[in-house]
Image (tube, rainbow, N blue to C red):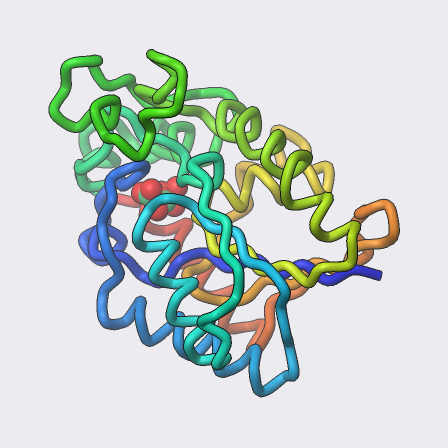
Length: 247
Ligand SMILES: O=C(O)[C@H](O)COP(=O)(O)O
């Protein structure tokens, strides 16, 4: 059996302000740092150890990983950063307040943008100052492949190749893997691992900073999954994420 640990970044500044974030590179709040340190201490206390970590190229996930590894006294751990673990791109919603959007467009429309499988938010214009196309961290991507918006289906389409190319081979080889990522890139991976339907994925919300353990068989099929620590607290935190899209 293999064990894979996934963790969404701790609270970010735009989580706190309830703003759509996507690829905007905001940092953690002090609460987010505390969540990451607590997760690391919990993992250490329960005897977890890792051989390799994966994360995105966004600082809220990278810094979460730093704090988790620091709390586990293994800041030396090899880390592979890849844009394919980035949060789903939120398009022209990036920077806008989620409750304001619910008041302006209705909670149902915001739910579709946040949680549906194939309804993308309105796209950024390519010349929008918020576009990441000039960001040198994405310079290796083919021209025009830096997204201007993404639905979850688009996120799955880039997370899965990274799973198949990097994460799954590492796990199959027996390396103990930790992944620090984002709410929707984790939703994309969970959808694949658990075979969640396009309708059921709407109900999945990932809380900030709580380790999510996947026990996988030899074929990397899930046996079970659970949050470390207080299960009720994790459920309440996930419900709070869902509520962020309310007016
Ligand atoms: O990108 C964001 O806005 C958040 O990190 C995730 O947002 P969501 O929970 O509204 O999808």
